Length: 379
Ligand code: CMP
Image (cartoon, rainbow, N blue to C red):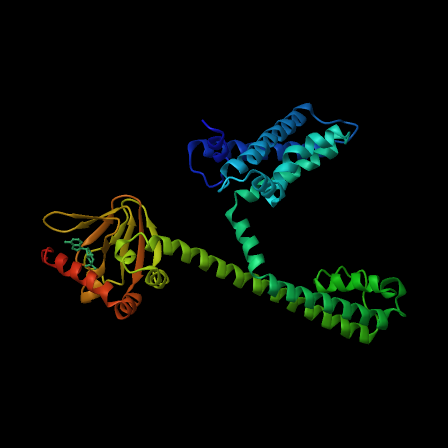
């Protein structure tokens, strides 16, 4: 077993038995380490830490230290093209590289520097950041923030300007009446942040009529700013999910020979209309006699078409459910998945659109439908 094999076990996407076992050990250690760290910080300095929990924390830190070393050395071995210093630097300076570094070295270093165990254990809470590697949603948050950075920064700038203007207004209007709360710009700024974020502690309240008018405006603008932030982030997430789904569908469509022959441009067009669908073995895809509202392309797996005298099996690259769409008649046969099957579905409206745009594709489908029609026994 080479070092690269060991390092590949740490890949969060890896599906090997070794990688799965490592993830179980990693997550269990993390949970135990966090419980031990929380328990240790609960103990008063007089009572002293429980040796068992300190031992657990040290064992977890040792595991994470080993992981950091393997990731650091492995970063160079797995980089393409191999470039040792650049790969090491990239890993060391990445967010997850820094998290691994603190997770491995934080606790032992704090103890070596003489920090009391109860306080050093607080470093253990940072271990939870290691989970960001295993939660796909986190990388999506990062991408959304990056994609929407200019809109988010504009709102942030607007927020800052409202903050400064409103704080200056309250300082001028209320400063004389309430010097303790509004007598300086920093004090007025604190009130403004609390009000704009709609936190509203109520520790400082404008007393003059004009001061209250400004306060009312600040509150309304605070809600507007957060509505804008929420709107930008929500549409950013929706766009990112669409992009990810499109890429996934694209790669599935490209695996169906019928589409592959048409070229990348057409695949991209068709991918927008197709919906991926995964069905378990035994699932009924269509029942004989039902009206037809969509057809399927098989990407992976196998289905059985129950026709007389012998059922027919269709596999990856084949399509089904096209006859009802072409003729407008009910389904001619019941179709069941024989094992877990990955499909792409095309609904009837999109089938018509494809027929108009890509006649060569529809001709191929119609030719196969005609061949099949000749085999289906009536009844
Ligand atoms: P449809 O009639 O819409 O629904 C049942 C589907 O089974 C049908 O479309 C075809 O896609 C498929 N089918 C019917 N007969 C055959 C056949 N002889 N060989 C392969 N597939 C068939």
